Image (tube, rainbow, N blue to C red; front, side, top):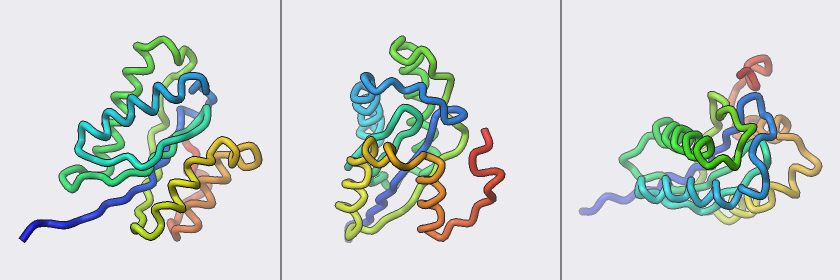
Length: 150
């Protein structure tokens, strides 16, 4: 018998101290670079988007990769690439933590649309409020004083 699995994750991480150091005119290049990392790891990207201070990724992570290692690789490689590119001169680094939320296939289109509309969403809602809402919605306990501690 073959093995069957599905590991859909909505991943969110931000820049150091949530500073707006990701110029919008270079977002597509950054997203394509991250997509390359995801493909290299035999994972499937469904949607990536973000703003000047954070990124959302919705993907199916290959069964041989742990979530923390997957995110660490994306952050480390993209950090080096952004520094070398010269297009992100104010970028210092990614913040230390991340948010990784698992979903079922029935939620796929909803999450894809949510991520697709990030720029519009953040015209009225801050990253801090968005992350807080996601954690509450998923029943993840958090301490407010450590939530945005860099």
